Image 1: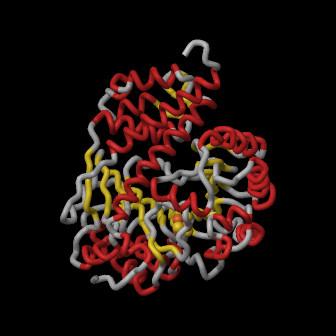
Image 2: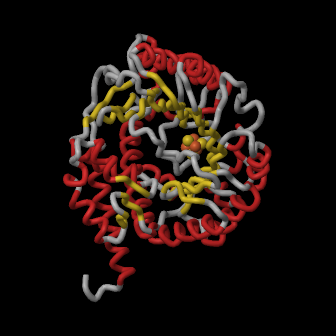
Length: 439
Ligand code: SF4
């Protein structure tokens, strides 16, 4: 690479890394299908797990979105919540104990009273410290999120994406969720009502300019004064690329790094700390969307993933099948893949360094003292790329490393989204036309 300017070399290495991670995550996430539901893996006695619940209903199906979501139909969603509570009871009976709950979607607040009953049930049976939910701007009202002690929600994460009206229109969110100004007013109205109010934003949207991004950043830090901001890079899959091209234009990844740097500089100057490669907080101890202290979690509901004992499990994406399985006393899990030891270590490194640091002694303890030796080539490569520096046994991401981790995580989640898409392909008739559960 002699003779190639340093910035060009980095761009070439970024492109190479993108391709390598894309291939690796496809290999890691290739599942064998199971005709029958599989039992929950055995829980560790005395351990309190993170529970993820998936609510796959949305009033608007945004063109850029790769999450597992279907068009909202009230009766259908009520049947789904009932089935979900059955699966939660099954997990409790199997010995699982939960200390933390994260409800994602879709839109978990499409039926607030159903969500509330589900949280109340969990709080009654488990010693829950923290409940986080995702929601949309128009569910922030008093009626949208229940705030009783039994159904108490500690952390709310609002999908805003941008305050720019023309981008909101392209994303088909303007008509449903209102203008950027209306969304800001709703956010300010609930400020201080939860332990943490997180705002989800997206950068590198096709028609997003540096000026539009800068305006959004100022609104976040000077007007809304968000507790926490998760600024996701735009992630695409083969299907969303087509629908985005129709509605929003084509994606240009070569702009991503400059926009990321713009975000980092603004948030830093506004006094926010980076709690992961793309999450910024005003105070310490807030949790990021994807990273918690818990390495393992149980995911329940249609389209949920679990990571338990080195095994990735996926639940059926068919709402019909999910309801039938729950009604007959079975789990919704239909696919499992056990990671080999090296892949498990790589997954550990990917998720832990996302927070900015990783302690090699703790990593060695988790893997019988073998982590540092087994991943010596990866660790050497990261140092050669200038992505990490080592203080004693602590690895820290450098500025270059933070952006590298944006690429790595973007590609990892793109792999997850691609898998979601393949699984959703089998239920295309359910996505827009939710019919009766026993069809
Ligand atoms: S972005 Fe949010 S509201 Fe839009 S379809 Fe995806 S999950 Fe639903």
